[in-house]
Image 1 (tube, rainbow, N blue to C red):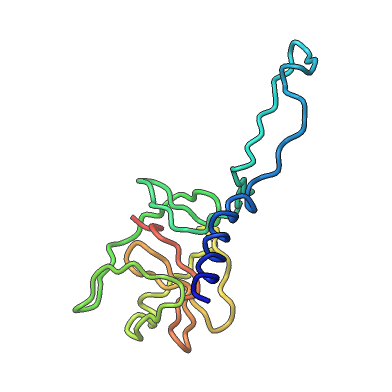
Image 2 (cartoon, helix red, strand yellow):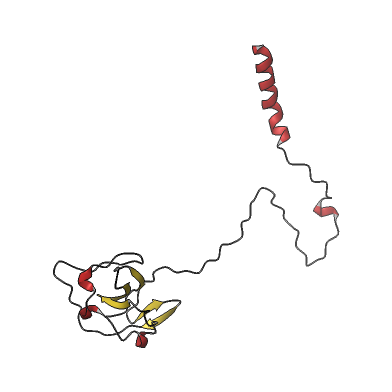
Length: 155
């Protein structure tokens, strides 16, 4: 019985490459076909998988330049503003959408109301634009969750 099983396994290993071999191409050779003088021969790559390019809009962060910052697909002029004073124990932090801004920043001292001059949309009810260093954050005042971030607005 062992001999029969080992013979069947050996037969499978020997015949497996033949089962997966590509069928022969029965088209005539390119040299025997008449071709126009300007035409290029077609090259077939049956072993190459061509995947279509993935085109997604880029929504990532762009480093601001000396005089401009990037917002929703275009560059906007930066604003000269007074020096930002962080509360005691705080320094610059790179905020992101979904982070929770502490309550110490959700007071009128940090609100920025001249958002229309920057080309930003007006915040919905219950939201405010909050200045955090050189950045502007659109924050839900009830929860403190950051909804949008504009990096490098001020210098």
